[in-house]
Image (cartoon, rainbow over all chains, first blue to last red; front, side):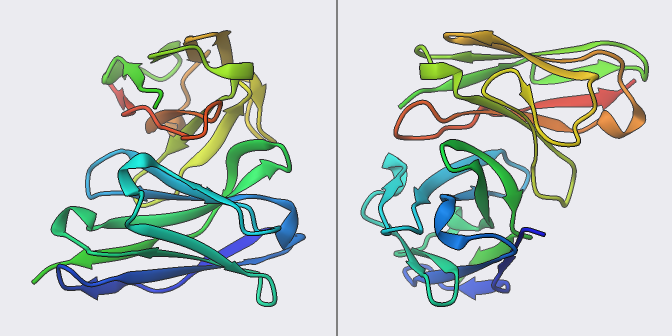
Amino acid sequence: QVQLMQSGAEVKKPGASVKVSCKASGYSFTDYFIHWVRQAPGQGLEWMGIINPDGGGRAYAQKFQGRVTMTRDTSTATVYMELNTLRSEDTAVYYCGRCLLAREYSVVSWGQGTLVTVSS
Amino acid sequence: EIVLTQSPGTLILSPGERATLSCRASESISDNYLAWYQQKPGQAPKLLIYGASNRATGIPDRFSGSGSGSDFTLTISRLEPEDFAVYYCQQYGSSSYSFGQGTKVQIK
């Protein structure tokens, strides 16, 4: 079955960077785009960006342009999301999610989430 | 960027009642690329509806999606106890895939 396994919780200081991984299994890794979505405590969902594991093309939400980088490693079927210059407002659970179909970009499978805490 | 506005913010209903949730976009969403998700506390979201009106695999038929252009609706025909949760719409018709702010369906 489709599984997305994310890396563990992180605690970072303001100004630092964090890199969250999302390892895919149970399907052909390069056939489906992967989203990154975050959720601050008690808040709604916020879309951060999307990456195409086949070729590495990506698109980022304007809010995160210049601060986020999404990459992939096809040899390990893993995607990464790195967020720089962290501030307290970046404290959130970060989710990766796989698209439903090759050309249908709703998110059908989700990772378990990674809590990133930014605190001095 | 397309802004999605969900209403109401909170819906207080009893089991067995009908729930109607609205999602309005700041501009027309191409090809009705609109999804609905359900989220319960401490869990990842769950896809209910994609393409505005297509139920995802395993989703009960009491959930239905409708609408086009910039106006979309999620209807739960008869609320079951497990349906009390927060619901989000998401558009993926532009290059930036935004979410609505959510509607909480609360038990009366």
